[in-house]
Length: 396
Image 1 (cartoon, rainbow, N blue to C red):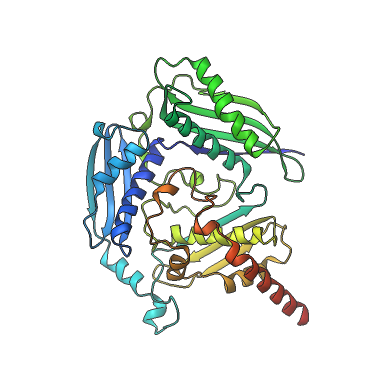
Image 2: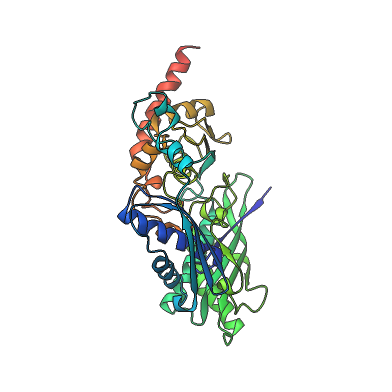
């Protein structure tokens, strides 16, 4: 029996993604000059107003308005048409003290990476699947690819008369074995000029964006249905049409709703916040399990307490696809991967200004990100799993 799974993505000028982009531009600017800064920036875009707020503790003077203007320009908007309001304050001294000196350090633990506590409580999730080279669900990969191609078509003039706001949704058909076998429906909504001919726009989107995106990831397949601007006219877009907020496209940022999410947003947060750092590490662990061919699908859950360096819970679930029991994979991964915040920050190089490039088309699946680079861990994890499996067999 076949099933249909769907996921969406959004273009760089979507109002929510615009806010994420502004927040991460600000974060990158601060980390460039003060890598130890504490940043938790939130952005709202409504009409012609951009509001930047949150908590920033740093030794430098952040260029908040300049960063917002640069992000607007990058997203395809004229920054001179926006008014930027700023209201930020320093991080709470109570939170800062609890994070700077962890529970473990206060108890006398002088072991590696014990000093920094988690910046908040919560559970973060990582996910990976073997169905695509990106180790992401195919509907999400295709939705990202379509939005990426839409943005490129606008900037290089391949499709004239389209705007920066847009989104896509892709529904993929899977057979009874869970293998993608076809495309059921593709939905594309793209902002356009008032004089853009709707039939020409539909034809261009179908032939120049959708068809090559599908061919690149599922050769020979065609979509049963392609709906372009199904609501009709889409002239007014961006924050003029819809208010944008940071952290409202969590499924786009992660696994398209086809893998779990802990609920914590990423953009605008420095790496002391484990809802960002921990999620990246959880993705690395899940992807390593799949890349090491220890499972076809992997879900990782890590729980933290604010001010505590070590996680309070860690679990791997391979949905019955694992080569070994999930408890064994869980124990082996805990022995191989760094899970304390300071260790994750160091290994993933998270104090570098890397975040603005991640704000669009998802934080996972970018091949150059440290949490996608599994090669340093695949052999280690495989060897640890084999060692523990041998131990378990010996003690039976």
